[in-house]
Image 1 (cartoon, rainbow, N blue to C red):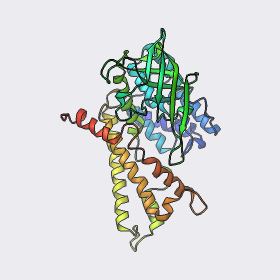
Image 2 (tube, rainbow, N blue to C red; image 1 turned 135 degrees about the horizontal axis):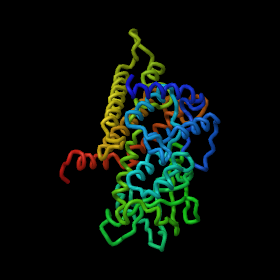
Image 3 (cartoon, one colour; image 1 turned 60 degrees about the vertical axis):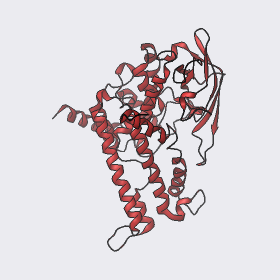
Image 4 (cartoon, helix red, strand yellow; image 1 turned 30 degrees about the vertical axis):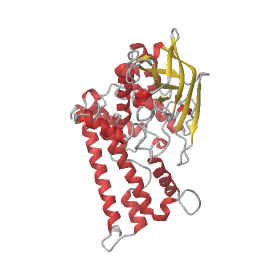
Length: 394
């Protein structure tokens, strides 16, 4: 038995023994937020056991709460968790975004201060990037950070701050030198959300949810010890973090999308009926559903191959824009098809004439309209692909 086969067997046995029933299937995934209560004791038990194994951040060094797994071992762990239908024990921007960024750009002190807390689910993070006048043109941001001795005083506003109402800390792009061209003079800082100078206001969306917020800074404090990278050169750090956001290792490893409920073809059989050969009766919708599932499977294999080819388990570079762009369009296509196949039952918002799946997919369709905008619009992704992947001229 090879070493990786032995690791797979050990992992499978451990997961089968230690993953509680309440941590399988669709359900709560903790983010580390001190403001969100974990409802199911099985979820707490699963989290504690995975923390002890170092599997909340499997590829991180053990000194920071990880397990120091290789890329190959990490792929095996994800595959075995999915085989068992085990949910991630910990999610959020700590493990997927700021953690990997600190591993690359953080000082030893910053790593020791922040990474173990993330891995132990003691803190949740949010992202301070977009502003009311700086969305796709993020480098035009105006939130100011003024040198005030051992800290910076921050004034300005961020918008579309996902999960800010639940976050304990923020990683934030701020302007520290307004006299230089816009891509320069930007710094990357970390700041606590639990301070008087930070005000958060959730934004209610058309889907009925409020995942995004406005965040206001009035002399908020970010200590210089939490400046990541060099002063006025935070754009480089900020861009790298976006690559982690657009294509974190866990999402790259993943197989086909694992949305709750039935598959496209199962829904089509249920709502459209079948012909004499047992196929979905509507040939056009049947063809579209099959094409989507083929594309989804091909996309999953491409992501998996990318992980296996990555060096030292690192997230790829500008090519992550391909995954964000295509994955977004695939997601939007699926939610549209789900609603279309259901016909009039696919536009349910509330009421006894619609079941929970029908209402969920209506809201999912509405939510997914924003997917091609947040994390960098698909137009921006195409520009990145053209310039930095294909090497095309401006």
